[in-house]
Length: 328
Image 1: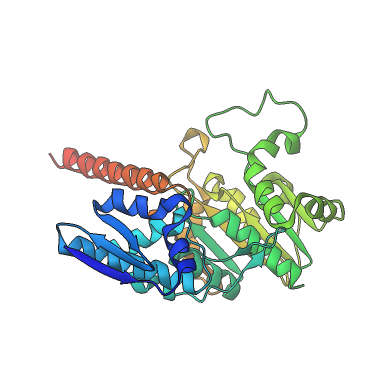
Image 2: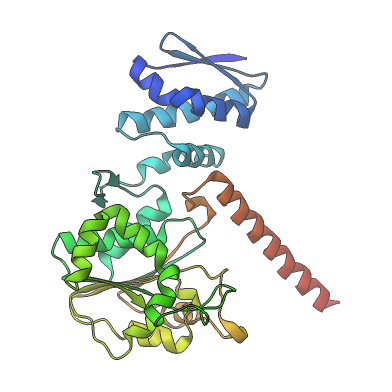
């Protein structure tokens, strides 16, 4: 079975195929098809017509992205595979692709998945937003991008980013220096996002002027933060008391984003997570919204999505088997 997908220019064909035909090779390997270029047309060949039709739908969806000026990278390719396989090909049109902010190099930052778009819109419309989901879904990076957007638009006068000083199976005690120096390695993802979007020089200037602050959660106690964009990262590792303390810090004209992954709680001694408690207590409070992310929103390497899905499946089976044991 062979079908043709027509492309109206060689430039678009090159974008579709990718560097060294990487996109086409990925499709061939995933779906067991052969894909050829014949002039500006693309031929898709397979013994199964349904598979050919699925690949044609992928090509059509990718071409629509190219015509919008979007670049086809590995993440977008994998996301397209996922959407077509779930028969949700209209998902790329479900969000408006507004640029959140531009990086120091001029690269536009936009939502890459439906979950990210919901997150973006929710932050705009709510005073307090909780982003809850697995690693790699862009929660931290997009929150920082939204903070910088608000700062550049003069909606806030400063940015405050914090996280709890809880070790992920490691010890902070032997490290030299004060608390700030001890937790700086754990704040690295936040610094990385700030450097990428602002550039290191601009970030350092704003930090020196006190307009951007990156600090451990302990430094938030006793403060009231007006006209600020405040981000709490790794919130699953807050205690109930810390979460309450943090949420009562923000003042007039401020916006709060709280991010966390409830599958990666590192609190010692089986302490209950402040993030889980907040979701239970604040779920119906006006002005506060909870945005769930899933493995579908992972924007790292394709294997990360598969790893997360496999762990979630394993944990569901463990809970199910545990329940069956108790019923016996």
